[in-house]
Image (cartoon, rainbow, N blue to C red):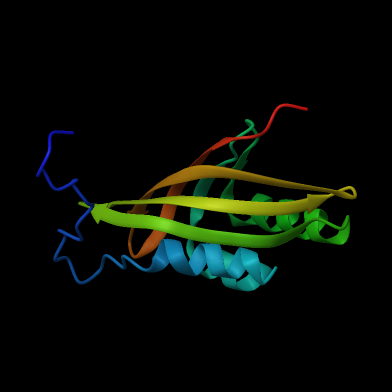
Length: 134
């Protein structure tokens, strides 16, 4: 970037009152609290959620089963901090840093989420993350 140029930032440009730009923040916060019901409240009934390493969950029932099984097995989000976020049209985006504990191992990584809204709920959510090499 040239000297004196201001970096571009995401802007909340959609003025549709049905679009809730904080919905992605609510989704992340519910995961941080391991609150399955609050996560499901952010999602459309026929949602699709894609994890960074490939698994895909279709519909609230699959998301609920995935999250409940993960928590029961000892999975924990110890930190999930959104570092930047924004919206354009029906898309919400966020960059984040997350630390998880799974099977006794704590892993930290950076990533991004892109999601599409429909009817005031998240209908499609895809996470991208760079997991550290083993």
